[in-house]
Image 1 (cartoon, helix red, strand yellow):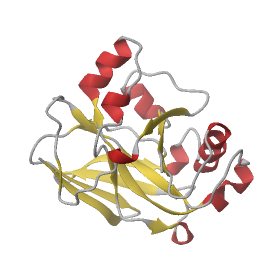
Image 2 (spheres, rainbow, N blue to C red):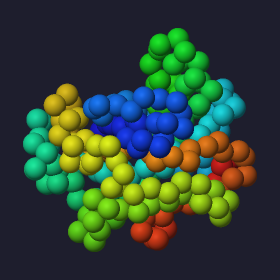
Image 3 (spheres, rainbow, N blue to C red):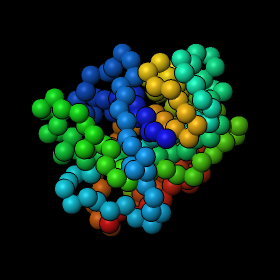
Image 4 (cartoon, one colour):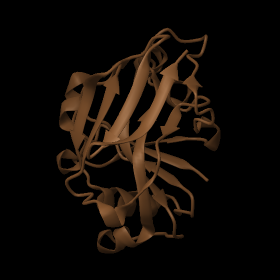
Length: 202
């Protein structure tokens, strides 16, 4: 099982970090050890002082596929959720300045949080509203209509380079509003008003 992540998939988020708007999906990956296993709390690693939340829609692949055409991409997943791509922003900044890969900042243990999965049969993923609250205040709001590359495009693009396997996870990018977490914070994630994610920061 692998976790494929898409960066800079919302214009406002690319702009808030001072990044160029990409002309094709920006891909990075996380290992399966990045999946958040503890349901009670996320512990900030002792090697970073600036961990940021990045809420995004996540789809779970449930069919083996390679070189998938965009028009058939919807056949390769049936479940989705809201996830958090935790990022050690201070570490990422240093790596980017040196032109080095981001893995230490993006792929560390428990950096991939998953909410409760929902069925695509109950929602329209082309115009899906989602939001993240920190300590009861909305900090991120997104709609999949605002993606630079929609989910079928992402699946088609990624499958050119990687065989998609059953159980693979695809993080589809975060909207604007990313920010830091501190000990004692509580994060709650919602899809169309339905709460699917909750965790504490320690």
